[in-house]
Length: 309
Image (cartoon, rainbow, N blue to C red; front, side):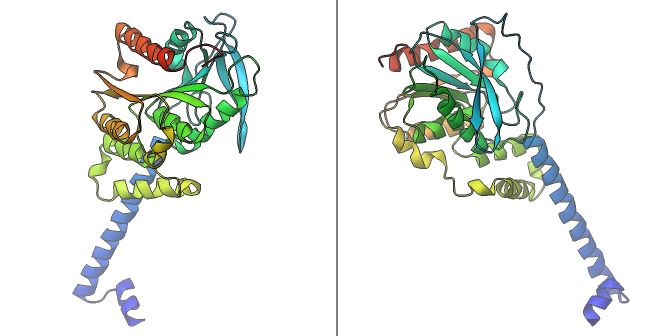
């Protein structure tokens, strides 16, 4: 008790120095924890600018299609009709993006008779909430495929999935667990949501502050505690044996490019990999058109747009 009393009301020079140091340490800990918490919040709640649509004037004659997501309100997406009985390709946007950013890709796929479906992941576009960088988003995609499987105008046994960064992780997760996924394209993907978190913390510039990375990672882990036993997608990639897979790297995203290469190396055949100068969101119109043609060609070769695969 005497020691505690001395620290609270220091009377000697040494006690005063120790008290001052403890105060500084406490201030530093609180400051770093506050910075980490604020940074994590900013990462998990990116700015949203939901796009508005007038379906009556949109090319491709899309219709609204709702599907239930366990534990959340029904989600609404855009269904672009192709050949009746053809497979459906679900297009998954990335982090800090939304379905509206992928309309040209959807049109390119629809032009080749595929049904195409787009929706907004949690925390993006028209869907409020906190993103989990892939955990809940995987549940979103699985729910979308399940909902689409109730339709009578599509091939309910064969789905294609295209996804970029966060959407790429989600696409691979779905491919390892849902036999209805017949072909998949992942662009700048990663194996674990924590990898994306680390990239975002590093991108903020605040990772130079000691323990910011660790505290951010710990907070993310606590927020997604229910997914604590979810292994990296690389653990289950063997389940995609026999499924055609295309991996795409972008030179302007070196961190994700390396992650994508690692995924490619650890994936079973059949698989392909290609490298682009720019990520999809930063391409010029001509580059994007060429990119979309490559995606269409991959699906045409591996999942023909007909009721007979």
